Image 1: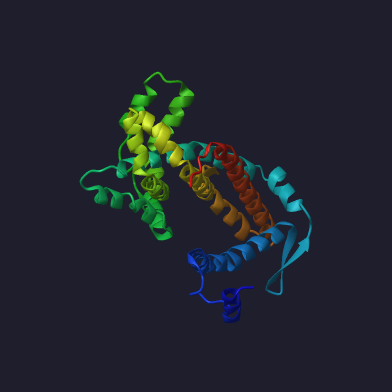
Image 2: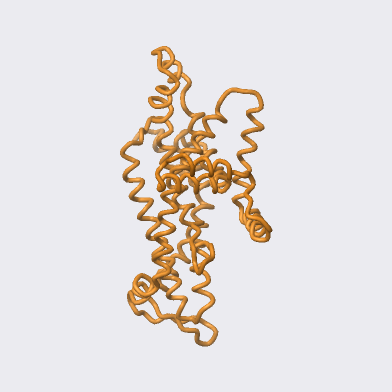
Length: 313
């Protein structure tokens, strides 16, 4: 062992003695600690408790809940007896398939516009941060209350003329229905694109300008440049946005129950906390099924999309 190594061994661990990579690792761990704390104490514990409740028959004795292990009985009730829940799951899944592609497309389109060179670019970037503010709990609740108390069903922007144009265009009914639903919910779709726009904007700004210069020298058109440079370089960001969009779509999925439009999470909440103690087990089972379906959907989509993702150093 050299004298230098022996000296380092005697000094022990010292931040100043670390190289650049070591210091980066230390700061990475420091910034990771708050996240780990939140995951361990505010996510893993309730998650494990929910899984335990889902395989138990809950009873309220002495002011405390007591669980008796019953296996998969709660899941059998949720999936075979409670037909409303399975129908709402299917509705939430179909809604996700309709919402996520248009969210990704619209987010990338807006990010490309915001990444251009023009006057007032900072103002327009600030405008598109508003959806992130609107996504907070208080703002969303206030908007929902305003919508419920409104006397008319008019949206922020009247799109009836466009809906009428699409309806009378001769397009097949299935396509017309999908397009009119997108048009009618365009405000909701835009308000859920804020985070994705920021992610795409970050990905676009990380693309080296030399790639665009090479494409220009080679005589590529704007469309060819997008397909051969922009799209491959932001493909990792597309994957991240897909994961976020799918999770967000399932978390805020709206379904029809007793001729009312509610969120699936609120249905699970009502079924859990407005019934007897045994419904805690049913509610936990519904939560687990909902959670597993979300994870499986994200896993399948990521497995398919990841094959076309271009990773670069």
